[in-house]
Image (cartoon, rainbow, N blue to C red; front, side, top):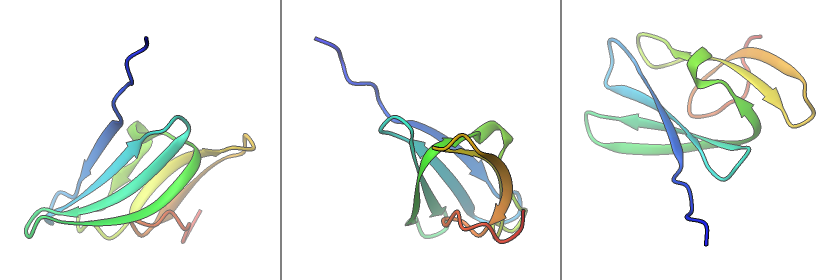
Length: 93
């Protein structure tokens, strides 16, 4: 019997604000974006994305307002963009 693998998480902290963007991968090929306010320990659940996000090529702005990311959709198309986490709606690409 195979053991179930835990979810993979990547944390992107804002340098000058109490905000952390969590990129969670689970199940396979699905990513969930969560915004964590560490000052009051509130979590805001956002987009679910089917495809591939490259967390090591993502970054959060100093104030935690914007996230730049690199993604590959389920159709194989690759793009980068800027969004307002926890939502992956591209504001600028």
